[in-house]
Image (cartoon, rainbow, N blue to C red):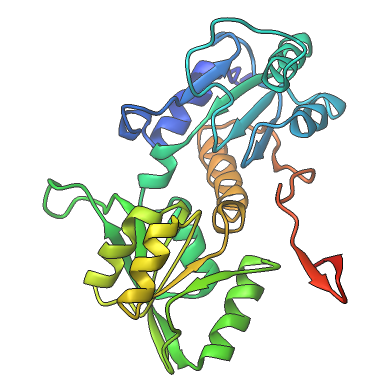
Length: 284
């Protein structure tokens, strides 16, 4: 019996089982950004961000579908101009007949989503959702932003920081507030989780790790003696890429599809760490 053709619409249905698009925030833009729903899918490339390099990677490997966490189109477009970065990406995708799909806040909110990938990377045990919906059916799978859990064994500050650097593959961290002398309970949120710092504090986390911490939140942490670590947006979210790649591959295999699903190899942190050494800038 011939294999059923995997179309973009069928892929969207499969993704909807992984991270339902209806879970996305009202302000968000998820789902099919570029492409014809009836278009067959040959192979799939997964990335955190839709960039020119990722589109070029897909084109060079004849991959016609890209799935990213961050959406290529976030706000309504009035024009597509080829002399702008977004315009170049859109025209390149259309020129190479490459479809682009985004799973954004829906992927943040599922139990096995972005923050869970970060929690597993840090080795937290017995983790649970940090901030869930106000109303959630009893015995329903946990959904919400962030995670809070415990380290397998308490760590001294230096040990903990070494673990964070290693687990996140980070080159630098920004820390507000004092690190406890012994750390066992950690809260986190992948991406821009500055607004959950007070929730982490209220839930008795000793340290809160996220990205893009607001100055006022850093001051609040300092004043309350609560340690907040800004590890950056990319470092706290990149771990979802291999996780999502595996989830998509396994879901499609269960449905009888054999498309290759692979993670990008051409995406790095857009920020570079620079320090001043002997009055000269030195890249980390």
